[in-house]
Image (cartoon, rainbow, N blue to C red; front, side, top):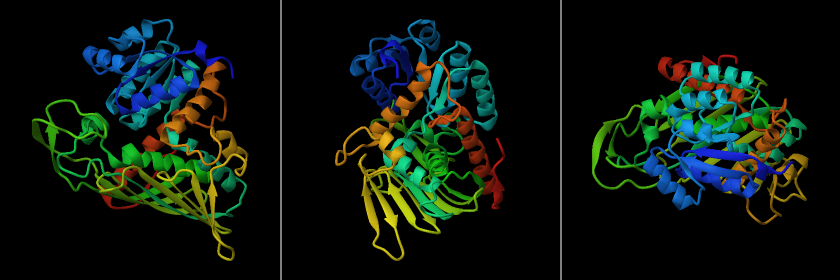
Length: 384
C-alpha cells in the first residue's frame, strides 16, 4: 500500500461515530484535513476537543479544499443523500455511514452516481472486519460446516430503554421509518449475508414500539449519552424492537430480533449458524471467541490468534492472540481495505467492504420489512 499520509480526508459529523472515524484514520496514517460539524460553532468546539486541524463552515468549504480527496459522511441519516451527491459531483471518494439513504429510490440513484464517478464509494458495515467473522466466512465458503440450514441471532441494546432516553434516530424524518431495524438490524443483515454467502430473499416481520411517547431534550444530546435539562413530549412511531423470520437464497432459514430497549444489553450482536456438518456462533461483546459446535466430538472455542485462524481471519487481525481487538479496531481494518483502493484511485471488482450497491440492497431489504409488518405476511426482497 502506498503512503496514506499523502491522502487527505475530511469527516462530516463530530459525534460518537465521527470520533471513531477520526481515530481510525489517524491510526492508519491518513492525513485528516478537518471536520464539519452540525453548525459552525459546534464544529469549531469539537475540532478543538478532537485535535482536528480545522473546522469547516460548510460542505462547500470542504469540497473547495484541494487537500481533501476523501470525505467521510457520519451525519444523521437524512443528510446522507444530498451530501453524498454533492461529494461525488465534486470528484471525491466517499465513505458513508449506514443506512446509505432514507429511501431505496435515493440509494438507487446514489449507486448510479457512484458508478458514473469511478470513485471509491463505500458503506460502513464495519462488523465484517472483526477477524473471527472473516475466519467464519472462509469456513463457510470452504464447506467446513456443510450446507447451512439455520441462521439465528440478534442485535440488542439498552440505550433507548427509558422514556427519557433521546436521540435523533427516534424521529422518522431524521432517521427513517425503521429505527432498530435500520440502525442496528442492517448491521446484522449485512454481517450474516457476508458470513454465509447467502442473500436474504424474503422476510416475515413484526415491529414493536413499546415507548410511544418520549421526552425530547431542548438541547443537543450525544449518541449513547444521558439526556438532561428541559424537555418536551414527542410521539414516537419508529420501532423499539423487531422480530423477523428470514429465507435465504441458498436454502437456509433464519430468525433474528432487534432491540434498543433491552436493559443491560449494551451492544449485544450475535449470530449462530447450524450446518449439516457443524455449527458456529459469535457475539460482539466477546469478539475474540468463536464457538464451534459438534455432535460427536467436544465443542470448541477458537480464540482469535493469527497463528490459529485461516488465511482470511489472520489477514484481518492486527494484534497477537490474547490482545483483544474490539469495535474501534474494525474501523481500522475496514478503512485499511477501503484506502487500499483509494490509493489505487479506483474500487476493485470484488472488494471485501460494502459497496454502495450492497448499501442499496440493505435499503431494499428494509422496504420488504416495512411491507411485511404492514401486511402481516411474508414479503419478497426486491432484486437489485
